[in-house]
Image (cartoon, rainbow, N blue to C red; front, side, top):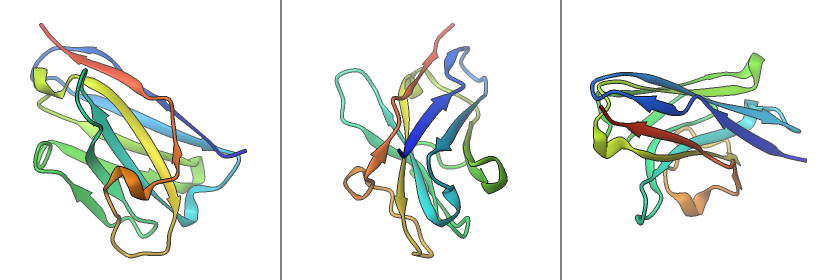
Length: 125
């Protein structure tokens, strides 16, 4: 059974950094595109950063220059590093997967078919 588990969320001060992890089980990530999405309370889930099987990446404007997405296929894990965090970055962060050979990752929620349960990131002093 395909499963994604996020971790690494927590409380962080404005300007701080956080590394989120997405660990896959029940399948190998090698041929999958992975996306990270954030959802603030009362708002729609939105793209943050996505990575193709070839490690090509897409970052949304809200985090451009502040995020790094990477994958370690040997560990079946994708990471999202967020820097210079702002209070408006607060929300639940989800990772999602879709088997894809595309060279560029799609970074829209409708394209992904497997989702994790999310991890809460709260940016506050």
